[in-house]
Image 1 (tube, rainbow, N blue to C red):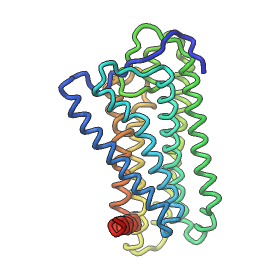
Image 2 (image 1 turned 90 degrees about the horizontal axis):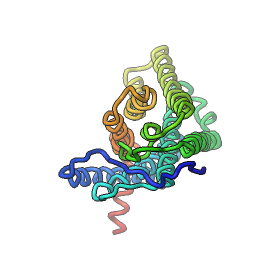
Image 3 (image 1 turned 60 degrees about the vertical axis):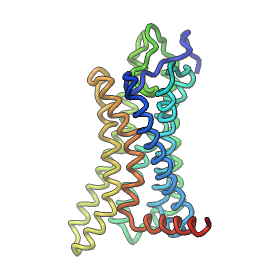
Image 4 (image 1 turned 120 degrees about the horizontal axis):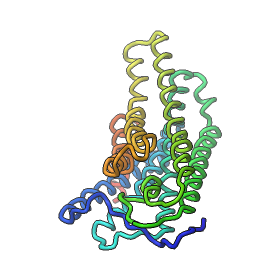
Length: 311
């Protein structure tokens, strides 16, 4: 990936230029980052360590927790550093690297959410065949596939963005390097990059989203077409509620940023939406799953008791 311009660095202007707010924002985002790492780390720990959670649903939940830790780590440490930095600079290579891992982890999470919806579909609509269909080999293959597709999707963006010519201002009106802000700074023809953003990224985002909706539509049709007691119906739907909440939290801002036209929204609106899925969603995911899942709560209590006893 060779840069064809003389640009060596960009300036990340961050979420605000009001100096008085930056110490307070530093404390807020640092606390959120700690919650993300501790919360998702705890979920990952119990999923790996507790044999009762060695099931497909929790295997994918562990993948999601790992993604959320990495996803927030791509953007938040640099944001925290820039709150007290006078330069707010990021090297060209650092910018492209951040862009790559941001899209790698983001697109992987989008596809993983669809895989998790498929898992719930099989569990509810094909319960007698669940253990046969969702075997260890298939779960591993699906996980490896979404991580691999996410990597090469991001590589496509990072390679094409690194080949752009940048002239004029090198100030990025964002708190991290992303394709849309960089396209605003590029000179020359960016139609191919815009097409890739709208078509390829749009497909990566909307394809799994529609598959997720299809899975839930099939689940609802299956539940109401069969004779279930109210308690059984409630139990089946409650197993999907946590995942569906995560899907809505993740996809709403993603659709706003990447499906809308480049000139259709301001950078301030894009930043608010980006904070939702890079900061807020990874923070809420472990809370949503632990508060609504008895197995995860029980495993967490067991780990806490074990740590207290060991100490």
